[in-house]
Image 1 (tube, rainbow, N blue to C red):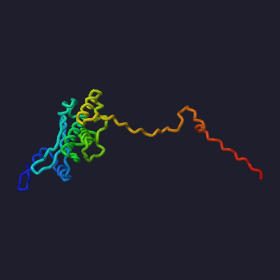
Image 2 (image 1 turned 45 degrees about the vertical axis):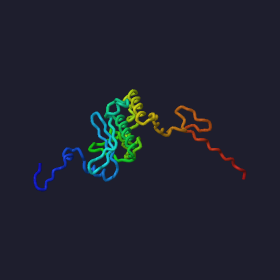
Image 3 (image 1 turned 120 degrees about the vertical axis):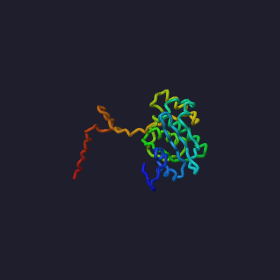
Image 4 (image 1 turned 90 degrees about the vertical axis):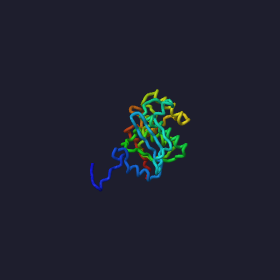
Length: 211
């Protein structure tokens, strides 16, 4: 460790790598409630935190460990669990009067469609406005369809207990334009009134008028 009259010992959480104080300061300057999402090997934690001079104040929170009580006993750190945790936390935040927030990732390295953004998807669907880009997971991921029919059914049951409404049907992807529309298939005869492919209609000869 360095020594000298000008040396200043870094803050403990900076030394431990637990807090990025520059990022934290930028979030505090926004004046919004921080939506803090943290993950462990077996849990996802979503907290709505407001700044206070005496220390941060947790207004609402939820953990994936609560989900087995709601009928969803899958792994606590996967995308469907994160979504349900975010949805449960958003419900409690709305009851506390929170309408908007800003995502706090801490020192986590974000990647598109990850567990953290699964929790964010649940928070946003829960009615709390949080700015975000195109980072949310695909619908079949947060609905748990990749885990099998049994887990997907358990997800739907837990969703209904949290939200108070059945899980809406999966949205249909917009179909692309039919590229071959209007063209006869190979070997198919053209419709009546349409010239065959490669055959140009013969030009009608104009009758010569007597001079």
